[in-house]
Amino acid sequence: MNLIVFFLCLSFSVFAVDFTLFTEPKTGTHLLIPILEELTGKKVYWAPEFSNTPYKECAYSPMDLESSDSFLFSTDHVPWDRLTMERVWNETKRKRAFLHLHAPYSLTMENYLTEKKYINFFVKRDPRDQVVSLMNHYKYVDKNNKSLNDLPSDEEKLLFLIQTRLKNTVLSFKGWMQSPLCCVLDFHKLMGSHGGDATDREALEELKKIAKALSIQLTDVHLLILYKKHFGKGWNFFRGKVGAWRDYFNEEHKTATKKEIGHLLIELGYEADDQW
Image 1 (cartoon, rainbow, N blue to C red):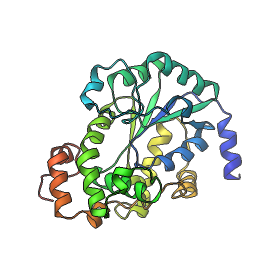
Image 2 (tube, rainbow, N blue to C red):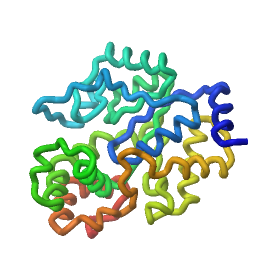
Image 3 (cartoon, rainbow, N blue to C red):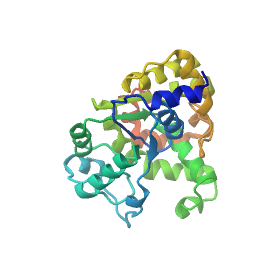
Image 4 (cartoon, rainbow, N blue to C red):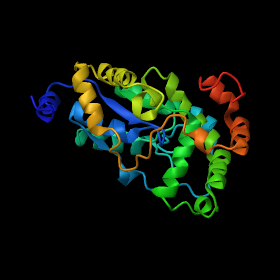
């Protein structure tokens, strides 16, 4: 059977598991989106009509999220109140879609997903690789960050992001890794042999976690075909290399990173100590 016909048949079967895709930026979201679309027959919904109001010179502590009654869908946009969240949710259901947001973890959001009986897909990635990917994103894709792009060298841009973004991002999202609602995927395994630090067999195991979370039974062959069909096709995919930070970090970057998130790298299992 043709793969597309196979998945179309699958898409119109009874599909019982509802889900969201709440990820951090630069963690393989654009690989997961088409895989989830093809597996479920649902289209991704970005809720753009609700998410176009940025903060104005406003910063917040990730710890504020624990007691917030609002829903933060991004670390740099104005939060939604419950009425707005319900409107987004209803629009998602109307479109027969799944909601994708760069939504920081909060008890408010987790409780909301529990109430709606949804699961969430989340991808963990070494924050050092993530910040390098973010720098390249601003360099090649989104060139509107004036304070960053005015810096004369990549070394200075990377240091700026380490000192201004890294800790806040890790603290904002790490709660999803412990959430019972989450199917947590490993970026370095998801990249398989393409990333240089895993195998395609390990990538397959990540895909099997997705299928299991969705209560979908597929052969390994079908999952690998699906993976190879979509890998590297995302509009802002750069390299996906695992450990790429070693090609970019100098001693100043390492010192700044240890100061900002050294203990978090150990807590999250990316380092055993600070001797890296």
